[in-house]
Length: 80
Image 1 (spheres, rainbow, N blue to C red):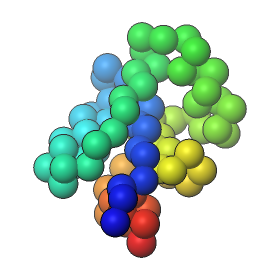
Image 2: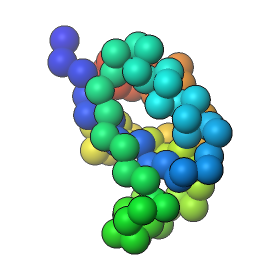
Image 3: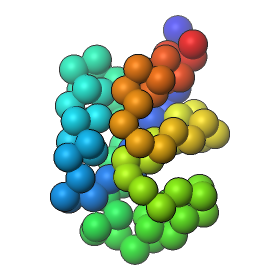
């Protein structure tokens, strides 16, 4: 089964962002990191998603998960 795309919005100073990235790496879930501290366009994307916090994760281009919810994110990425 194909893994759904995963995009994680982060900042440099967010400990939960680091924990989530470490979790995804440990589960071998490929993801794109969009660090809002480094790119104003990604800040605008985050606001368009209706989120003001990080980590915010977008799975399959449609499911938005705000906060550190590793098991939920993994399940959605796997299509469960």
